[in-house]
Image (cartoon, rainbow, N blue to C red):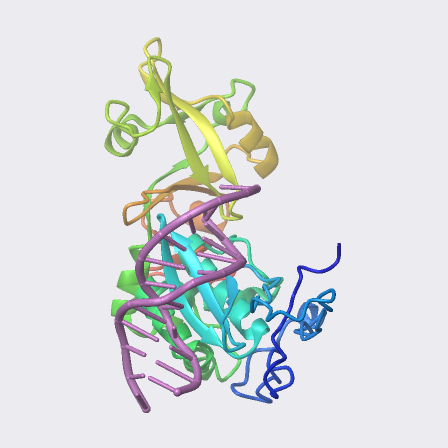
Length: 337
DNA sequence: CATTGTGTTGAC
DNA sequence: TCAACACAATGG
């Protein structure tokens, strides 16, 4: 039951060509995850083909990693699927290297919370930077880097810029880290803010409803032509929070109070987020064909107390809120909420 | 020529 | 969506 009947033709004198020695240090891969040192690629075992001398059908050893497929020459191909179509990520000598390439691709294609082969780093700053780097490039660009085995080189280059600007130990904002404004422009397009609201006591009370200011509702959530299933009872809208969790609310118009509201599911959100009156709830939408809606909330703090919530520009990127404070304001900006 | 990565199919 | 398989396209 063990085998997948892996028979490698050893007809040729080239003993086993399957186990590829890791290219000692082909590229300084960033701290290969510990978890990958198991089983390895020891699939060079030759299973006895009972009595059979017949030439075996060269069966390629399948990879234990997602998105990784064996190549006839013992190398490993990487592919990801999107919209019924395969996107080829490239070929790699090491199976682990291939698996990591898939992880990079899948994070770019499906977001930070996508299923990956390896456990992702827990370093917040590092992850934030990589997320930013990833999403500052198109999918094509990322795929190109991976194909050319230049992704980590490029990423390190980007990080060096960041840490250099940060040389004296002072923290800099993501804004500054970007350096290239055009990059920010493109990245910011990935997700833009629709509107914010300071929640009222009744929004977090027992009514299980959140009132969306009419102007914002009609502008961003027109009930008429929503793509979601819309009935007389309203529509179901999905929102993704900063942790990648999906929240589904019923969205409808209450004739009695002439207001647009989120109802079913709202209390659950309030409870999990420990939402309190005065907190700020923000709504975002990703650009592109997806138009995915996002929701995020934050404790009333310096931000909203100093000002009536309005004057601060916020761009939410990849789970990170980026605050652009007017130069005339505090003078220095700071991230780290 | 070696190798890539596309065409295709069938499972989940 | 996904990988297994076959093999045409690729390019050095």
